[in-house]
Length: 122
Image 1 (cartoon, rainbow, N blue to C red):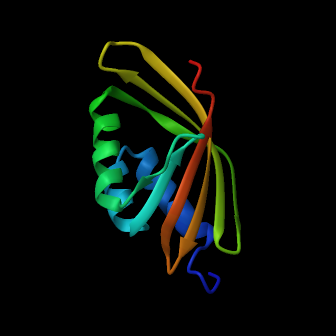
Image 2 (tube, one colour; image 1 turned 45 degrees about the horizontal axis):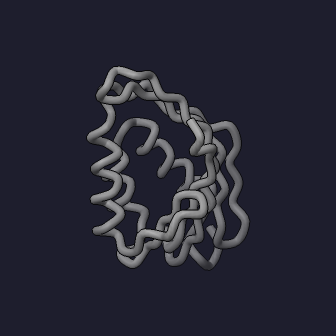
């Protein structure tokens, strides 16, 4: 673990929570109260409470969670990089497959900024 409190083990534990469908638990454990989260080039959403509400809407759109597969992961100083896929069936019954990259900045063992990069055209 470096001085900013991020290690590959911490990032793996975070992703294990998410992969197990425990997204909100992961947020409460690994995200700073002042976190900002951003989807592609959209304006960031500020604050843990607001981001939890945003994630609750995502979770509510899922009928069946089919899993998450990590393709690549790295930690460098206070930044983590994760490439992964998410598979689920939405509430309309449509199977969804998302490929994305998450870049997170950490401070004192918590994420203070996270940005997701993915193709939003499908």
